[in-house]
Every structure is written in structure tokens, then in C-alpha cells.
Amino acid sequence: MLLAEVAQATQRLADAGVPSPRTDAEELAAFVHAVKRGALHTVQDSDFDARYWEVIARREQREPLQHITGRAYFRYLELQVGPGVFVPRPETESVVGWAIDAVRAMDVVEPSIVDLCTGSGAIALALAQEVPRSRVHAVELSEDALRWTRKNVEGSRVDLRQGDALSAFPDLDGQVDLVISNPPYIPLTEWEYVAPEARDYDPELALFSGEDGLDLIRGIERTAHRLLRPGGVVVIEHADTQGGQVPWIFTEERGWADAADHPDLNNRPRFATARKATL
Image 1 (cartoon, helix red, strand yellow):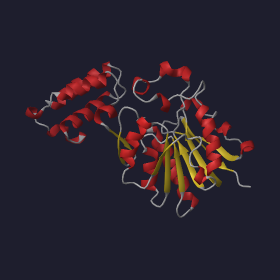
Image 2 (cartoon, one colour):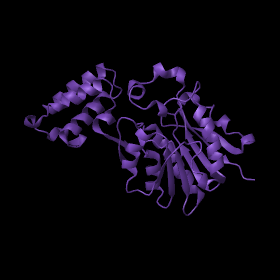
Image 3 (tube, helix red, strand yellow):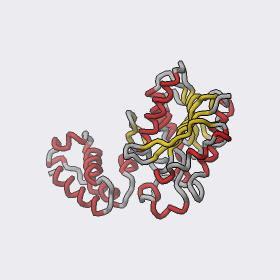
Image 4 (cartoon, helix red, strand yellow):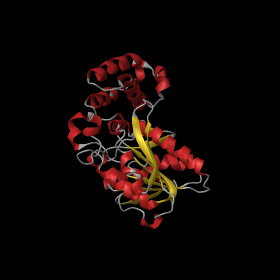
């Protein structure tokens, strides 16, 4: 019975334009029935929970899956998320993977890492978990987002602060090995093209940044240069349509070297990196 209901739900979600209808129908069935996705076939007909159709109706309205379940998965983490905080995306996992490799290649005993615009804390927590002796610092401006960030970082060694990414961590100037950020980067002119899950549910502060989407990235360039030691690295996510634009913000004239774009798993330009020039 449950698998038949899942098939019906899948069709409803597909008709509503949900990008991954089968996955979401199964995830919601597993959530409502408190089992793993792989164990849905073990749920007896008599145990079917009618609340399943309530959560399917919410997803039909394009409410994010993660808001309904209250959790998001990122690399090896399970995070608490909901209204007021940006839901971490799979694309960002490859950004973090590059950053981890870069930090390990530095051969620094206790690398210092700063995550600007941390949101749920996904990036900071992944780095703290996967680079065991790192000292990870994270900043978030929004109090609404911080309600979730604080839950996620509780018990971790992430140094979380509330503040503006452009003036954060003056006490770390010139001492940081890696600065990483997934900032807002959607141009205001593209509002109508944004998926409903993001446009209607993610906070605007985490999405939009000026006419070309690069306003905050331009500011972060200065922050990163202030924070990094010579030879330190900045990693910054951007939209696939901004490939080629972001590396030009990190110019030699502004104290950078080796500025480059990198593709995501779909081979689309997804993040830029640069190294603070050594004197």
C-alpha cells in the first residue's frame, strides 16, 4: 500500500513541477513513518499514516522538503533548518571539498579558517569535522538565521559570531589560512526566474546582491584580503552564469595571484579561488 501511495504522490509532485518528485515522495514517506528510505517496503498497510498526504500537499506548494522535515544533509552532516535560514545545496559540497584539499595541502598544523555568511553553519561545520585540527570561525548577520546556526554548532568547536561579513573578525587580520563563503549572488533582475523553493522560502538576504549579483562578493574580496596571511587562499561560490566574472574581482592590482574559476559536478563554473600575493 505505502509504495502505491508513494507512486501516486510522485505523480502529484511531478505535476506540480517539483524537480525530484520520486526522491521527495520517498523522503516524505520515510519522514512521516519514521523509517529509512530503503525500508519503506517494510511499512505495513495497517500502519499507513494519513499525515503523508498533508506533507505532500505542502511540497506541492513548493515548500522546501527540508522545511517540512526540519533537516538538511550536507556532506557528512545532518543539519537543522527551517524558515529564516538558507537551505544548504548539494553544489556547495564541491566547494567545500576543494577547500579541504587546499587546507590539507598547506601543511599547517592548526589551520585558521573563516566562513563568511555561514547561514546554517554547513560549511563551517563540515570544515571543522573534516579538518580535525582546524580553528574554524563563522559569522552570520541575520538573527533569524542564527537561531538555526546556534542549534547546529552547539557542541562543536566552531567560533560563531553575529556580525557583518565586511567587518568581521578584526582580531584575525593577517592570520587566516583560508577564507570561504557562499554569499548571496543572485542579480535582483533575475528574481522572477528563481525557483519557488528559494524565492518564496529562503531569506532574501541570502539570495540577492545588487543589480549584477556581485555586490557582496566585491566586499568580501576586501575582507578576505584583510584576513588572510600572505599565501592564504579565498574560496567563493557564485552562480554558474557568473563564470569568468568573479576571478576578475581578485586581480593582481588588488593583491591577488592565481585567480581561477572551478566547475561543479555538472561541469558548470561554480566557484572562484585566489591566493593572497606574497610580498
